[in-house]
Image 1 (tube, rainbow, N blue to C red):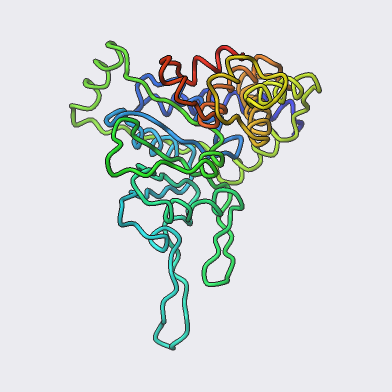
Image 2: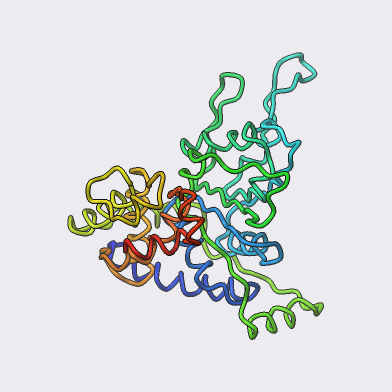
Amino acid sequence: MSDVTAINQLVEKYHILKQEISKIIVGQDDVVDQVLICIFSGGHALLVGVPGLAKTLMINTVSSAIGLNFKRIQFTPDLMPSDILGSEILDENRSFKFIKGPIFSNIILADEINRTPPKTQAALLEAMQERTVTIAGHNYKLDAPYFVLATQNPIEQEGTYPLPEAQLDRFMFSINLGYPSFEEEVQVVKLTTTDVKVQVNPLFSAQEILDYQNLIKRMPVADNVIEYAVRLVTKTRPAEPNAPALIKQFIDWGAGPRASQNLIIAAKTHAAFNGKFSPDIENVKAVAYSVLRHRLVKNYKADAENLSIEDIIKEIL
């Protein structure tokens, strides 16, 4: 099958996938789009929203519709790295045997990831970057495709541990969930207060997802689009000579090279979902907020001026 035919097929399956997800998830169209862009780009996503916005339900529904194995890890202050990765035990023959932890799955929901101490948060670092786990000197490969979708509650600060910058950078996207509109909320209440059970049909196999990820990687990108993405990222660094005054004034740290890579791969997926065979600058702009939001560190002046990261990204775009 040619790449052109494969992209047309992906567009078709993407629309059917959205319909399957909408059987359970009302509205949140933009959020579902971004989660799917992340999955087909081979990245990880951080979902930030107040309780009750169906973050967990959304991830569960997406994994069912895609047809991948799914495990949920509830992050708590007493969770240990071995609770995630697995541990070695002595079996009846007095030899060590490795019992796999919940991290060995295709889609991991790391629920309330900021509730657990840095030691346990760090257990995910190797898995997210290298797609492997090292236990007692042995290296175990994780199943492909592999995604971590983490949720975080922005309002509660008590008993939480902010994610370190190195870990935040491992997430391709940071996605903000807002409240539904009045009509959407009415629809949610109608759907969830009856005894009707909705079935979501799996549409892909693990191999198909990997094939589509490789298809997206093969997409050609014009030099001017790559240069635009890199220029956009370098503009976020206050020490750069071409950084705007706003960045020099309100940002302590800008985004690293991983942001430029993520902008291009996510722009490719965004373009593929829209039936294009190569991304343009508009596709880069469409994913810029999600890629840059968690990579810029504001200073106290920005807080004093009530400036959000979104305002700053909007300005440099």
